[in-house]
Every structure is written in C-alpha cells, then in structure tokens.
Length: 245
Ligand SMILES: [Zn+2]
Image (tube, rainbow, N blue to C red; front, side, top):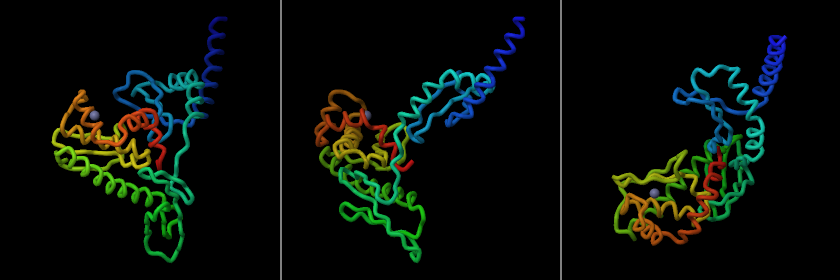
C-alpha cells in the first residue's frame, strides 16, 4: 500500500513540475562550476536565469523550479521594462532631456543620426533603427567621456593612458595600474552628477589605487556633487541596464 501511495505521489509531482517548468519564461545556463541549482536576476538581459550544475537531473530541476515558483513570479512582476530606442522615446543623455525622432525615408542609402538640442534626429531607411541608434549613443558616450576625463586629469595633474567605453556587465568603470580607464557607455543615461562621479572616481584612481580616505578626498575634489552622484549610483545604478538591451 505504501508503495502505491508513493508512486501516486511521485507521478502527481512530476506532472505538476513539468507544467511549471514550461510555464516559466526563464533562461537556463549549465555551469561546470556550480554545485547547486541557483536562480539569479540578470540585469543585463532583464531576465531570470537558472544556473544548473552540469549533471543535475531534469526532475531535480523541475522540482526546484516548482519550489521557487513564488519567488520567480514575484521577481518577474518587479522586473522593470526595457527602454527601447524607438520613435518618441524620451531619454536623459548626459543630464539633458532628449526625444528620439525617427524620419523614415526608404530612398535613403544610409542612416544619419544627429543630436539637435533636445531631439535625436534619425534619418533612416530601416524598419528598426534601434541597433544603429545604440551605436550612435555609444560613440556619443565616448566623445563625452573623453572630454570629462581630460578635464579631470588636467585638474589632477596626472594623465590617463587610455580611455575606452564598453558595455560592461559588472562594473561602471575601472582604472588599471597602467592608467587605462574603462567606462560603461550606459552612464550617459544617468543624471549628470552620477555620471560625473563615476568618471571622477576612476580618474582619482590614477593617484590612489585604493579606496582610502586620501582617495575619496581626491575623488570629491574632481566632481560636482560627489555625494548625490554616489548615492544615485548605489540606489539606481542597475536601472541603466534597461536601456536598449
Ligand atoms: Zn574604485
């Protein structure tokens, strides 16, 4: 009798978990290093990711998902929507309000983009110019950041070796021992104080490679509103991952 009961329970369980596994719109990633199943919020993709140890059997994965059902659904409900580079989209670029204005013209041979005051004019033959707009904004970020870094390095009296703008996943900026500064292009969407603070932070590392009191003193002297910028990045930094995706 106990045998039957057990089989019944298992069958029921398996049926349920299969239903749930299909219902969840999450990404699965097999990891050779992971020791246990883990759910993570990937702020880059804006999706939930399930990390699966290499040899985890499917029934174990499904059971885990079923147990974590409430957590997954809550996180998905909380997930902010992407901010897409489409016609009419309002953005804040380096602290200035900008609206994307797409002028479609199929006779055009190539896409032209220009920032005219509060408008980002996009003349294009493309149905979807979002990737092209993203490329433009990355280039714009590079120009703006180079300007800010050069102002700050001049005031510090120490030059940077190089400045690169990337789509970093875990850090907004970095500064190597050799003075190579790397910044996330997404910082252009942050309020000016926040963007200014991150750049000042990396430039201050040219003088102090640590986070000592001396470092923070230098950092503070290199930016407009150090406190406001630092707080904004801490509280809202991940929201910058919503752009484009
Ligand atoms: Zn630092």
